[in-house]
Amino acid sequence: MGNHIRETVINVLHHKGKGGPEERGDLTGEHPLGDAGQFVLACLFIATWIADTFFFEYTTFLNQFAPLAVRMPGAVVLLCLSGYLAKTGLFIVFGEKREKPAVIREGVFGVVRHPIYLSEILFYLGLLILSLSLAATGVWIVGIGFFHYISRYEERLLLAHFGNDYKQYMENVPMWFPRFWKIRKTS
Image (cartoon, helix red, strand yellow):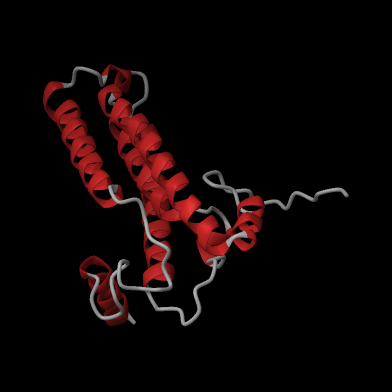
């Protein structure tokens, strides 16, 4: 099992074996600047977070009001949740090629529409809780806007490709905030 997961991750990262996103007919595509934007955002966030947390400490004054021992459990939960969403979301999308393209509703995609992007947002939030860096928080807020923008772009692609099937999915599954209860619509 471990080798299968490792092989899937390698295939996802290198777009080998089962065809990269641009080669696979069962995937609708993504924003042209999505990957580059995510890379730039990650570099900017990590650089800001490390510089402010460990070197300059210009905007980490809130740490004096909330000790690390209090912040650590929440950060660990968010980082673990982030890893789970990323791993399962990537595996569902890229783990196997579907013969017939369809709206993915299984697993984490049945709870939120963009679990992979949400995993990145939660990862950054977990790091923010560890340091309470206001400078990195600013980058995180810009990142949320970026993820929302590319998600909306991709949803337009999915609506164009799947039509009412994806529209119904959008009505039943929230974009960002999981809804663990079923809201009943009255007719």
